[in-house]
Length: 316
Image 1 (cartoon, rainbow, N blue to C red):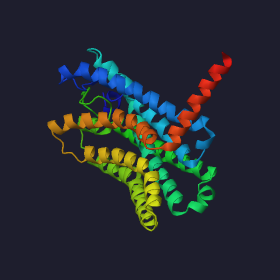
Image 2 (image 1 turned 120 degrees about the vertical axis):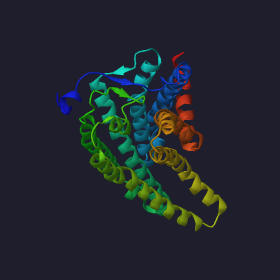
Image 3 (image 1 turned 45 degrees about the vertical axis):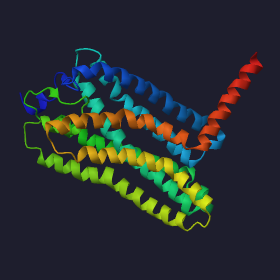
Image 4 (image 1 turned 30 degrees about the vertical axis):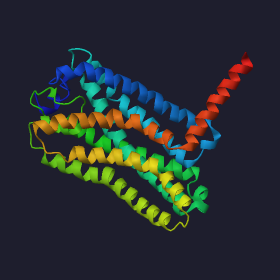
């Protein structure tokens, strides 16, 4: 049986947190609660952005797509993790593995590019406020989204099959709670230097290039804000960018720290918890960051709640 056939048959075992059995029940409850809150928070952001006319702006167009991405990204891995934590069955089918890997790579790449698009939106809003609605027109916003989805999915279409077809010499156990690319590459029984080099090149394009765009945008924003004379004007400008900058810091900070760790047993356990943070905590925090810091979103929520309450009174 050749490596290709061997790599496309049978189930896989996701070891996950099985080396910490005392933690599995605790993690099951905590992750389930966090997942339900993530679903509720991001769905609320999407609905508010679509239902309130005051939020039909480029900023909230991108924010609604970010919430949709967070919902999709979390749902691609957390239900399987909850199933594995709830009992002794740690298996996942080959098809399930392929779908999970494709979504993990694709949606992660889309989010990198979406955050860069949001940074550009903030750059135009702060540095070219009089031309904001002209520059950030619906056609450009849709184009940026399509480029993000196209590049993210193209990256996944290239890397997923290459990673899945690596010969594993019968190894079925994945020392992770999802089919993450580094964990799969470590399972291979061949030299993976060429694939790791390809991964690095693609990572520069899909991860680091958007980060450079974000840093350039914010350097221009900081320079423009510092030229504002009034303290209240500077505070308002920084507050406009604060939520997005916080989300970017969480997203990229976790990715950079996670993939800079050396390969040893202790860092592997640490990597699982960092990936868990990346998969559930960050999508959970994003809606809170945007609602707690944003008067417009809180105002939209208040208007929708009052409208529903008034509608209920009229029906009575």
